[in-house]
Image (cartoon, rainbow, N blue to C red; front, side, top):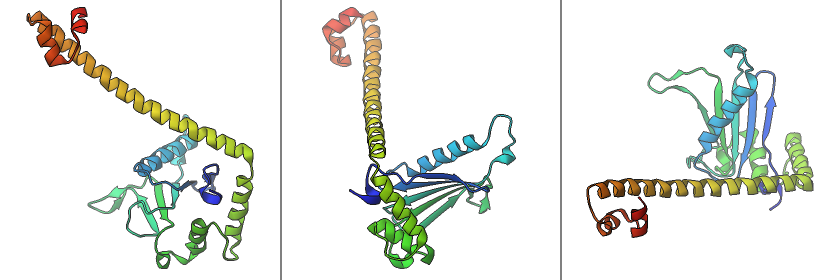
Length: 215
């Protein structure tokens, strides 16, 4: 699929405007851990800002902006803006971290005027107005879509991500099975000490007669 939704193209942008650190992330798939990704990105930017021996006051505000082609909170709002605060006193925590989630699928009448053309572009992937900023984005996307090396890099990265996820799941499943087997072996060992025969032990632990005899 061409344009913004092409898997080989990323619009992720990290930039320092002199006053704050800003990370813009394009999201085309709804994932349950989106807020946790925001937490990780904030931490990564802080680590990049603060070098060993530096004072905490050197940390500048950080903004994570997720541009989503879905409504993560399903409230039909165009913008969800988050910062930390005391929920009982409505007191801001004051650590300078902010997370913004844009819902480009919200009803058009709810979209603030400054964002209407951009939301429209994300939806249609076409430039309908004369906004120079939207035109610049469109040109950059077109250029990136035509670069084969980026497509190859992104395809490889996606494949590695998938393999990692599968390997992690397989590892967890294998670990659970090993844990069950270790517990069964411990139980069988105790049952043997108490003088129970192998058939009874096998019935209650699920271990084979051969496995029990080796314990």
